[in-house]
Length: 447
Image (cartoon, rainbow, N blue to C red):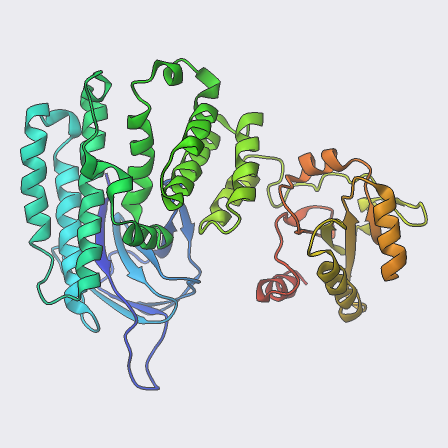
């Protein structure tokens, strides 16, 4: 297994000449340094854009997050913010030292998680006797708490203590499953290892920031609470769909419920692919929890497990404009095509149409077509809106095959934007809204 070194670093505040969003890493082993963020919903990695200058990496991070600096076989996980100078010193013994703002807190977290990782690496779960796990957990907890500095702030202490709780909960659940006693009818998960008894405010914070052991703990927790129910174990391909239904019924804090549901849906798609049940569960989740902090990870799952992968040929669209002319994507080859999916019943419809009108004017001399596609069920609603708003552009179109379009393009909510390249291939099937900085950057990048 790989070694994970955890340390927490925040922005170092200097004078106006201070450096920002830079990681300085002393004594690297390899020339190939990479900065990644671990997915909260799976064990996959997302690479963070960096530029290397000597022993420094200039990074582009959109939020506070736990990230991993990969140096050969060594993986150093730490907490970074969008702005800040981070200095990591590696010794010949692969010890890691750091200085600067919040150094004591950083050292506490680093030493604490290094000790826990060392325990996991050197104590296979199946080799720990069932009757020894309680005393081992108590001793390990004391050891980890010993790294919590007395001069840290109350919030820093609470964060470290919450991380210890998650660590020990993961250890005990995985031990119960792998040794086998979790299948005993008499097995009951101890209260301190159930997520509903964690400090939910701190847990929410750690979740938003992609703390890695939460991505291990939550799937393990779901597995153990449904392990002894024969209905689930005999449900076959409907196992995850049944779990989704049961999780939705739970009378628990909404912050917990959305994490459990997201993890369950992610695990379902990872294991079974985008089946009808899994796709329906995903769409319902994205609709019900539209502000979910890791929504982009679920959208990536959708794209990567369907025909909507960026770079694939865009599915054909059966539609026509107000003059009755049939829309054909092939006629737009040689140009970029930005499709705005809307409907008169959607509260954003007026805003969307005004945005598209402005874009057509702004980019009129550029090699790009802006297509406004209505998914109204009633054609008359679309026609009346077009007449009323005087949106008579030939690229204002309507499709009678709404469900087919939804299925082909994996549409689960409106508004939705799609960008297609000059060869009819998808650039971004979930393109940014035209009123965002991301849209301007994307258009500038592809021109």
